[in-house]
Image 1 (cartoon, rainbow, N blue to C red):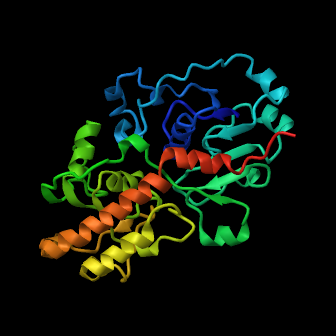
Image 2: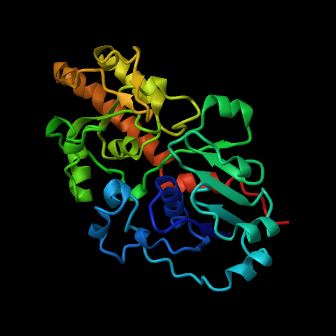
Image 3: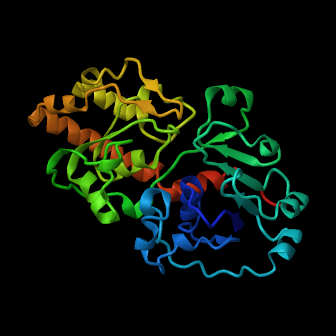
Length: 324
């Protein structure tokens, strides 16, 4: 299968980059990044991304072997329908080659990824592409049932493979508290989660957040306080049911009044109105660790089977029809 991937290479985009990462982990694909996504490849110094990119260049970046592909004669290849699919990494931000692509391809082979935090759709393209929306509201789901929900994912090699000794109760990073974002090194960032029993997370501008996935992949239990408020059409691969079940059985659900009301600011970020120190009331006895370990194993199993970047890319490609 031959794929042309068109994305902005001047700034990162978590959804676009997750799908691209997954594509390059599927054997047998020819994937041409029209604008070379230089920051995805491991021939750069990862440290240069820390102060330049959202997320400090962690997780997806500087992790792939260089993509040795022929980027010449792309216009002719489009005219000759050389590609089986053309993917726009963020339909709001980059539409290079738009006129040519839409002249020679139809909606069965043009993929539009919409990973914006905002719920707004790129209305000009929802009917003439296979459209994937991350922050997909229930209202839009009923209005546009042909739009596909999509969520973030985690590289398979960033998922822990064994038990890690826990050294503390809660991870250092608190969403929205800038002074807790102390990590400039990916290994230190992931290690902090890995040695912690819990890590806090909640809705920021969008419901879906890479942090949700990073926490689970390190065998740390996310404390996703407002998880029940997340629409069923968002974070569709995230194990919300497993987490809610754990919260209720462990007493965490009642402790943080997760069934209660939450407020959100004008950027749609949760306003913290819970006392995070309540987590210190958890009794770390044998019953706690037995229940905790059981659910961590379930979360890791789910992550490996449903939340890898490869699985994400396969999901996207499953909607492409063969070129006639």
